[in-house]
Structures are given as C-alpha cells and as structure tokens.
Amino acid sequence: MEPVTLTKTQARKIILNAAGLARRSQFGTGIEAVYRLIDHLGFVQLDTNYVVERAHHHVMAARIPGYQTEWLGQLCEDGSIFEYFASDAGYLPMHDFRFSLPVKRAFKTQRRPLTPAETKLLKEVLDRAEREESLMVGDFDNDRVEASTGWWDWRPAKVALERLYLDGELMINRTKGFQKVYVLPVNTVPPETDLTMPSDIEYARFVIRRTLGALGVAYAKEIAWRARYVKGNLVKKELEQMARSGEIRTVIVEDLKGPIYMLPDTEMHPEISGEVFILSPFDILNVFRHRLKDFFHFDYQIECFVPAPKRLYGYFSLPVLAGETFIARMDAKADRKKKILIVHNLHFEPIDLDETTIEKLARSLKAFVRFNQCNDIVFKKSNNPNWLETIIERLSR
Image (cartoon, rainbow, N blue to C red):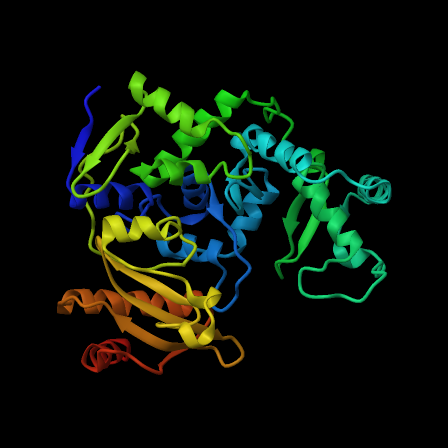
C-alpha cells in the first residue's frame, strides 16, 4: 500500500482530533464523556503533583466542561475503568483488562528474585487482604528496621503492597484524599471481564492500534513506549508487519524523517475549532517532547525536574494551545487556602495574537480558576505586558 503524504498542518489536525482537542466537548459532557474519553485514548496518565489540580483531572477538565473530580472514582467503583500501568500509572477502560496481564507478568518475572523473608511478607499481606477486603499503608504498624534514607525508602509493608499491586494480586482504589486503598481483584473486576492472557503478538497489535488511535500519527518509538515495561515485546516487529499488510498506513510528513504510522480509518480532514486549551504537562499531547517540536514547532520541557537555576519558564509550566498553535506557557500554582490561582509567569510564544484568541484565553483562564477551586487569579510576571493587561481587563468583566 502506498504511503499517505501529509503536510504538517494536516498532521497537526489529525493529532489534535485523536487527542480529543479538535473542539471542546468532543466526547460530550458529564460522566459518560469521561468514560468515552478514557475508552478512546486507552490510557490517561495519573500524576500526584498537586501544584494545580492533578494531571488526570486536568486532562478531563480541559476537554469536558463542568467536569467533576469525583467522576473518575465513580467509574472505578462501578467497574468501568481501573488504575494500573501502561507506559506509566494511569486509568484504563476495564474491557482492556486482559491486556494489562502481560505488564503484570513482566513486573513479576523481570525483577530480582525475592528473598524468603520477602516471600513470607507478601503472603502475610495478601492473606490479610483476603480477610479484611481492603488495606491501606496506615493499617500496618511501622515495620521499618532502619532509619529512612529518603522519600523512596519505603517501609516493608508499603513495598509488599506495591509489589502485590504490580503483580496483579491486588488492585488500587482511591479515597477522596487520593490515598491508595489496596483491594482484591475479585472485589473490583466485573465477573464478565475477559481474563485470558493475550499472546505476545496479540499484545503488540493491541498496543499499536490503541496508541495510534490516541496519537493519530506517530513514530515507532512513541508506539513502543506504551509497552515499555514488557521487555522483548514485539511492537516494532508487528508494526513493520502490519504496515506491509496494510493494517496500518505508513505516513510521509514534509521535512520529517520516518517511518511514521497511522490507522487506515483515520479521519483525514478534521475541523479544528480554534478554542484555547490550558493543558497539563502530562496530557497525551505533551508527553513526547520531540513530537511537539516536530509537528508543532514547540520546544517544551516540564521544569519541575530541572534544577531551579536552570529553569526558563517556571516550576510547573502549563502549555497553552489555541487551535493548532501553542501560544503560551503558564507557570501556575493554586493557593487553596486563599482560593487564589497564582500565575508566576505567563510567557507568550513569539507569535501574533488577535483579539478573538485573547478573549478565548481569558475565558479559559476563568474556567481554570474555577476548576482549581479558586475565586481569583493573580499574575506575577509576563513577557508581554500589553497582552497581559488586555487579559486582566477581560477577566474583570
């Protein structure tokens, strides 16, 4: 099958449509839209950073007007979605549960062998979970023998719970305060769920189709990333086979080195609304930095992982997208006690903005303030005082 040739503009539109950012309410409204979005993307990354509202809620709120943070928990409780790993920890649709089994097997078999003491502790914790039905770290006495050496020096009971979760022996629910509650799969997974271990080829092809559905067009390394915990996976091999057979399409994009891939039934000419989205750094659109450079000419890095003296834009800089163009980055923090969203830096990209886009940005800022349970917004700095003044005037209306 002949490759598909795309301009960068065409590729960007396909990417945005696949990400659910062609227009607001692309998947509807209400809790049903949350499920439809997760089912479409196949995986929504979870993150604990609470500078602004957590990333998994941020992803939903950017796309679904009126989003309520409790909806994710409700979908977990009714068995529609579950928390586990793909490329990272996140939420997945329950009907994909069997494709989490290779990852669980990988965690179980690819780590170093357990010591007899560790095996004994795992059994004791699992026995207790079976008796009590749910466990939290706080349910265990402090079983640390030596003083902690840092954040990730977990107590043995915490290590045991996490290993049982990674191995698939336990699953995770969340309290309203986002604390982990470890439960048995039998009490969480609906009885009609398919628990058949997929073959290596089945798993690879599932990852390819799922990832391309969420990314629109993608390089092999991005597709393989979703299967990164399964060492020796067949994703790249099956990509080549599926391209030869026409099950996926090879794409040529101007000035970009391939191979690049897409699904055969991809919508080729989606309309982009031009709305303004304030996005999480962990949004599916933003996690592959090279992709932002190649397709959007946006050089982005989340700087919370960068030493303070080397930060250019701020600790937790949020990409701001208008239509198919990134127009700004906003380093923000929610002061929840004072109910003020503090924008430490609103840095505009070197592009021209019209009045309509500035008005849309102001509306998105108002919604973002409310989403973070704040009543007001304060700006500390911007590289374009005139645009900032206009935005502040719009916000005051």
